[in-house]
Length: 113
Length: 115
Image 1 (spheres, rainbow over the protein chains, first blue to last red):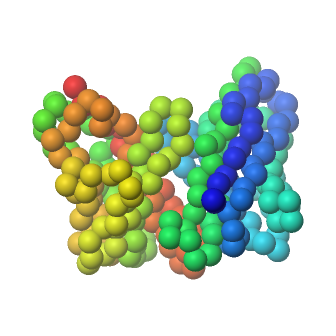
Image 2: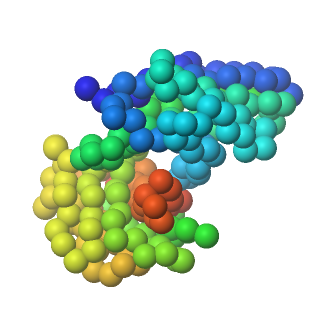
């Protein structure tokens, strides 16, 4: 069964600190993996997209890693800001899969001053 | 580029009435539109997939007669919640793939409250 798991479920950190969010998946055959940021009451916004051959991709203070062998991805946030408070969703796409992509449950990040 | 405009952003309606939510692709043609529902502190759940010019495909457990989807043009897809009830209160989001299908753009979402 194609699944995406994320950990932790929620995370609280102080402003300026770094944090890492995890995503494990069983989606196969793998096509690509995306990290989205969803502010409360808003639609998700894409942060990064990674294909099988990509190990690391950065977008400002966000750095995503992908290990296709272990089917794990991480999203590292550097020097967190209050505006980073949001849900971060890992979405994995499979080739030839009816829905074409599977959503993780998300990690709720709260950055406190 | 690749913007999906969703309206309204929030709506409050009486139980038994119908509500229409629109999603427009502003700078690309959206032959496919995905419709999601999200309850508080939960992940997005796919409700249905609409394709321009054809009938929508609904996920298991989603009532097609209650959630009417129309995708009459390449830039507009609508979701109508008919005879809304309080349990339909949720956050509804649309998403459209674009270009080489590696990118998905989400609308800003619609907060529906049925009283």
